[in-house]
Length: 194
Image (cartoon, rainbow, N blue to C red; front, side, top):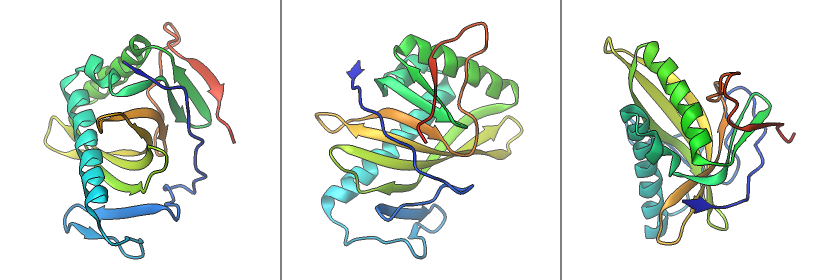
């Protein structure tokens, strides 16, 4: 179980998430190329290893959501964990609260035909003080074989001793966050810092 009490402030956005000057890369999955106009410093081993770890971390998140292993998904977070969407921040103090909320969100997605979720790193910054911002693009794979855009989220990750990563906060940029039903409030709702 992770213990961390720091949170990050959201970035301003204009519809699609903007990438700040510290943004490291934007990869096109089909071509594996760096997108136009995006700064990329000379690669070095530490950057490449971190980039691979972030990509593997997102793959793990998507796999756990697809499999419904929400206990393992909750262990990917540091608590208190924050989810922000549409001007409201929800703080999850315990894994059990997050499991209930994400479980309800997953049930709704599966009821609408989703059968698997995949993710890719759209961009990540260089990181500072053991923290990394990652823009993740999600794809929902439906039962009929089609896919839909699952949105873009900004994940605030921290590096743990030993090199593992943990989620401190998720800012849902293009869709609403998983939310609890009125019958089961699982988190404290706070207005997001502006």
